[in-house]
Image 1: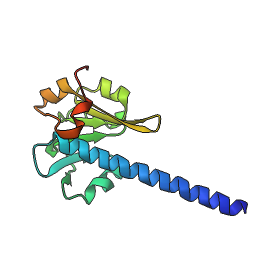
Image 2: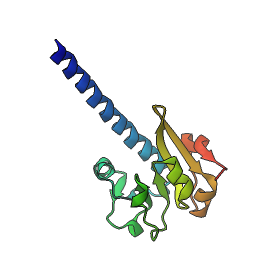
Image 3: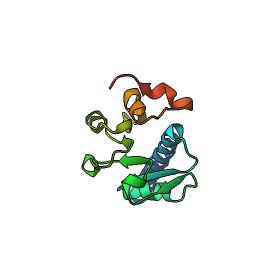
Image 4: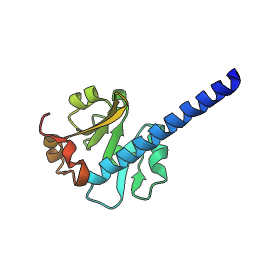
Length: 141
């Protein structure tokens, strides 16, 4: 009986992580599409999970050089490339505050997804957020 309960618990936990990953991919896609001016968006990231997520998408093209990308996705602050002057979405609020190229941030807070865009930084890249994500644009830093 204990084995069955343990197995069900493990399967539930795996399903929870899979669904969180699916949510993350869907939210990131929505964020990029709301800012982009082109039909196919070039994305650069070093994160293998994100590369897999965007690899099979018709609207996104993964590139190996950040200078050829439209957007950069950075999960860890050590993956920041200071020589690449591209709009960046980060996954940590502290990194967002410290990174001048970070136009947006996506992170989980108390089990809920949190999204923020910086109006000032968006303007520096001549970008605008459109649609339902407009309410997440902040005039603060």
